[in-house]
Amino acid sequence: MVNIGLLGDISVGKTSILRLFVRYLKVGDIERVKGGQKCTVIKTDFSGEATIPGGDKEDTLNQKETKTIHPNRIVFREDKSGKAHTIFAPGGDRQRAVVKMGIITISRIATQIIAVFSLDRKLERQFEFFNDVRFFPDNISVCINKIDLLEGDREKGLE
Image (cartoon, rainbow, N blue to C red; front, side, top):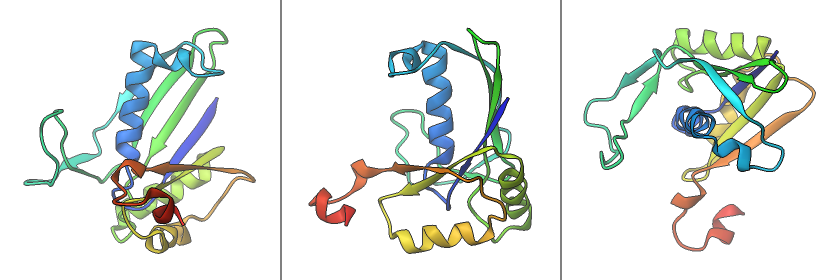
């Protein structure tokens, strides 16, 4: 079993990534990715989400702006090998004690960490989030999110 932690600052898209991954597994899109294999979702837990009243998102895709208080998680199983894996996504508001505890706990139990960064705002503050992470595995994967929200020259924005 592999425990994976999606870690990142507030509103970098951790919950959206997790929900999209569940969708890919359920409709079989993951199998089209190089190296992807059929998996079955065993359990999803998004009970840690609180909807923000009057959030900024348009509701054209039934989207809601949320704040994660308690870590979200999904458990899925590889159909071929039978191995089960869990992905945890804690909130990013490290000023809240309950959220900070979730971040620290997940950094301890995760055998793999994916650091999520959003390109729609400055990276410096997003790196500060990782000051509260106590344990890191030897290798960390990085997910660059929201590149589609960069205004103007994307190449310049990536610098």
